[in-house]
Amino acid sequence: DAKTTQPTSMDCAEGRAANLPCNHSTISGNEYVYWYRQIHSQGPQYIIHGLKNNETNEMASLIITEDRKSSTLILPHATLRDTAVYYCISENRDDKIIFGKGTRLHILP
Amino acid sequence: DVKVTQSSRYLVKRTGEKVFLECVQDMDHENMFWYRQDPGLGLRLIYFSYDVKMKEKGDIPEGYSVSREKKERFSLILESASTNQTSMYLCASSPWTGGRGTDTQYFGPGTRLTVL
Image 1 (cartoon, rainbow over the protein chains, first blue to last red):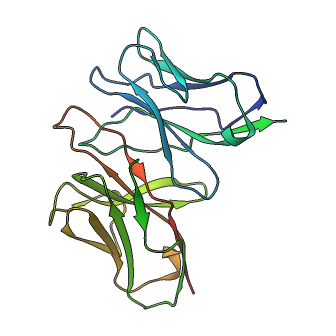
Image 2 (cartoon, chains in turn brown, red):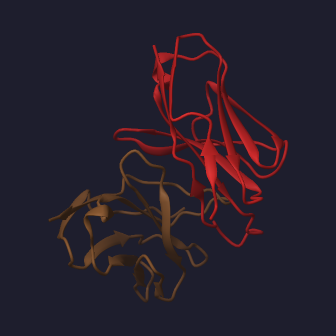
């Protein structure tokens, strides 16, 4: 089962792009990379996921390296409401996803 | 929009009480999950269910049981609440992926349970 490594915390200025890295060097070929975030006092919220190709939706972009050992979540124009804990997940055990400690992202005004 | 609701946002119970936490989803999802979240430990899976009347133990099932009598409802039961079960409890649901991989989980707002 793949494990992920993320920085404990990051700061980003409001209006700038927030780039959150994630290492998943033991990921296997059929394991997806998922990103969730959790705003204080709320349940986790799905952001985006991908397998090999880069993905983009209305919330974020996901860049996956060619060897699939790492990925970056990009919030193109961070706002104060993006302050949250961001979880990178690349573990697939029978439809169970395993949350790690995540990255606490602080958006600075 | 997918909606997962939990019966209470805040709950205070006494040691030894039987506690029921209810979760309802409105998207006809096959899979439902119960997690607890504690500072420094992240989210930990307690139990999950693939279908009505089916249940599987997660990583920390001790002290808990579950019930899934209807597809939309998944209940977490603390048979005899203890102070170490004070935590944030999160319910989630997801559609069945047919083994293609983990699909998106949709979470409820959480229930903060305090056991005195």
